[in-house]
Length: 98
Image (tube, rainbow, N blue to C red; front, side, top):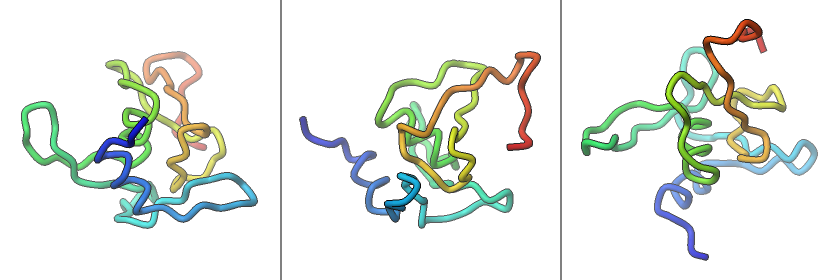
């Protein structure tokens, strides 16, 4: 199975941490400390999106409406799909204090 262009682009901007297994984003970082990049949306327009969101969609599948992609490892720069999960932003237990 060949990699998509998005997968290749993501993998060119990471440093693999062999100790933690994290794929640490080396591209642009937001003020809140998360990786981000510009990517074309479904209409072909450029938009800024979190690197973990793009990684989830590229390696796992679509992110459902009302859901957020978070790192289970606690590393804000990690985009390893094995460390990502969808979180319901409207659930009682949702918090951004990771």
